Image (cartoon, rainbow, N blue to C red; front, side, top):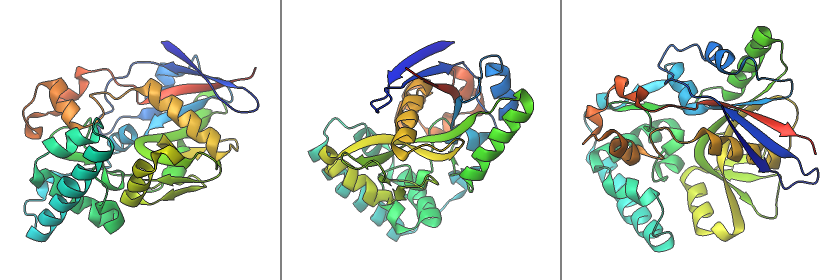
Length: 298
C-alpha cells in the first residue's frame, strides 16, 4: 500500500490522501466490484472517493473494438489523416512544444494505423474529434493487445452510480465514485466553473470541443491549467474545480501502466509492432486501475 498526500489550494486548505494497491490486469469479464472490495475493503471509509480508470473499466466490460477488422481505408481518409497529424499537428507541436510526448506518437505511428484510428474516431465523434492528434473521442489503444482499442463508456454517469451502489451493498460504506481518463481538460486560470475538454464528459461545466479543445489548450497554455478528464462522478456535491483537482491527484497515483502512449507500450514490452502484443503481455506490469482518494480536513 502506498500513501500520497497533496495539498488542495482552496479556502479550506484540505489535503488529499491517496491509497493504492497493485492489481492484475482487468481482462474482459473481470468483476471490478469484487476486485475493489478485495483490495480495499478494510481501508474504505464513509466519504472516500473511489477513482477508477475509464479505460480499465471499459476493458473489463468488453467495451473494446478490434481496429484490425477495418481492412481498407479509403484514400480520402488517409490523406486527411496525414494532413491533420503530420502537417498540422506535426508542425504545430514541434514549433510550440518541441519536447511534447505527443510528437513521439505522431512521428512513430504508421499512417495506416493513424488513418484506421481516425476513421473510428470520425464514426463515433464526428469531424471535431477527427482533428485531435490521437485518442480521438477518448478512443485509446494503450494497455491493450493487438489492434484493440477501448471505446468511451456510453453512460458513464450511470456506471459511476451503479458502482457506488454496489460498493455500499458489499461494504455498507457511503463512498463517492469518480471515473477518470488521461485525456486533457483545460480550465481557464481565472474561471473555476467551466473547462474545455478534448473528449466527452458528463461533468457539469465541462465542454467537449474535441480537437479544437486540444488546439485551444495547447496554443494558449499560459491561460489554462490542464488536468486529466473527469469522465463521470457520483457522490456528494462538489465544485468543478475540486473534482478536477481530485482527478489530477488520482491520475498521478494511478500511474500509466505500460506508459503514456502506444509507443511507450511497445518500448516497454520490447515489441516491434502492435500485432506482437498479446493478452498475456498485459500482466507483465502491475496496474492501478482503482485508487482511494480521501479528503483530509485540517
